Image (cartoon, rainbow, N blue to C red; front, side, top):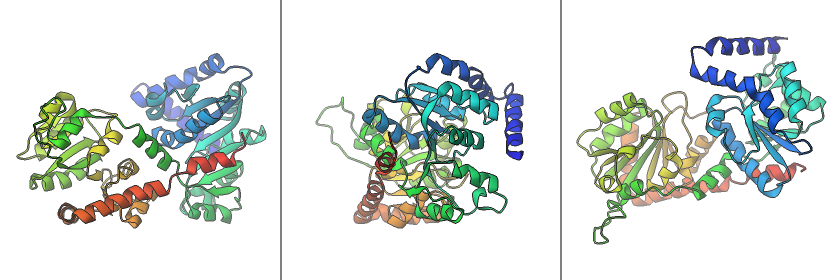
Length: 420
């Protein structure tokens, strides 16, 4: 069968690449120990709910459901698997799960061995995870399996004349909880009827993140112009702050020259890549401004700076709290990054043109809380309007926040439909 052959070929390619590349090497090391890890950690007599996420982004979508089950049904154990090292390496110590490991390649032998040891009582696959042999075996063993936050488009293989094998995979799901009505319509056309439109659990996740946001004294001082350690007599300016999250060079080539010419706003940049080469490139674009780096500054120094560069990971979602307008990078490359983490803070969100496949970006555009730019002139005109019209700035921010709040609740809808 072509599918199984493709899995074998992929497995071989990862093995061949492992000696030369860190990511395949980490994956192979994780796969070598997965069965022994499961044998050691699976507790006999306990019921395990299995969640599978390809990578970190899918995990964040599944996380609200994991944590709600954990809270409401503490008698169940949680098994969390990842396909990608970028997910596993970051979340291998995640306390919301009892066991975290890699998912073995989707070969029939691996599948049976994995399920024999893990013996899950049900499974949740997040968004785009459709592994044929796992699905078939779960169905054969009558283990309920659900797809969560999935989204379907007309150009996917399920809807092609040659996509019969993949259509059959979808029939193995006990239920698919999809993001929109279009997905439900496409599935209906191929005979898949066990479908409910619940929305995207990421909206619930960003609200969780907002509630748990970190207080960042350096960012606070950057915004107010005064550090907490300084005298109460020092005046607070409460500067307007433009926050650029997950930016790439094509993004920076647009917004940095604009702010070189505007002195009354401060610029907070969290680049997607924090390698020294990229940071030097950013610094070379900034003209006539005092710049500080997060890991090399103090609140007192940040209070006097015009530009603050976040040169470490883990702060981005909390950082948006200190901004007035957000720019989300990636729209001039493979696709924009997470717009919801910014929108939840009631601020306008700007991004580049590669956003058409991102439903949340399309929703922000329609709501009036998001704005697409294609050129420097687009950006300059939009920012001039936001800077000079306080009502427009506030209304756009309120619309972005309302968009997120209105679409929250998918986690509750999923759990209400699943029998535990």
